[in-house]
Length: 225
Image (tube, rainbow, N blue to C red; front, side):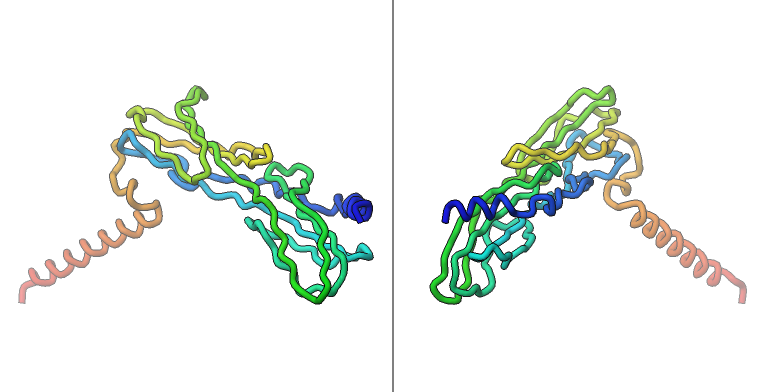
């Protein structure tokens, strides 16, 4: 049976496994590129990166009975299988786009028709954040499994650039995200700190309409009878 398991894994369709898509790296969410900030403390936020697995199960004849892709999972329950001997394997699709890796596998047998639960150790994802000065030097670096970093003591009047990347517990990393810039200590109208550009445009348009309406009412009252 051991030889059969090894042979099954060796003949599995390695070439058909699709690497992680390029460009699926975590990306900056906040602050927006070119954001102008009014004080020396700022929170940076970025997107999460999912972990993808491929689970396959073969029966005693080598026929494939399960082929399913899972996201952010550490177990899978099969559909009801017939009594037989089965071989199973779970591949991890690395975030770097490298060749898929086996993270778990084995054999099981069923004496009656039943479902089977397959378990494996989940791949953990962490994130690296770095804040750069205009000259490219690192001002702040941060690594955690969270999706944000709070940075203080930013210098007023300075422009910074920042980016993030992901790392997994198997030693793979994504590329750094595209750089985003942030300017600290500007005198820009504070509404830009609270509203996005389109929200601010709607707010200003509403204010203009209200003023125009009030002016019209005032002029109407002043008309001679």
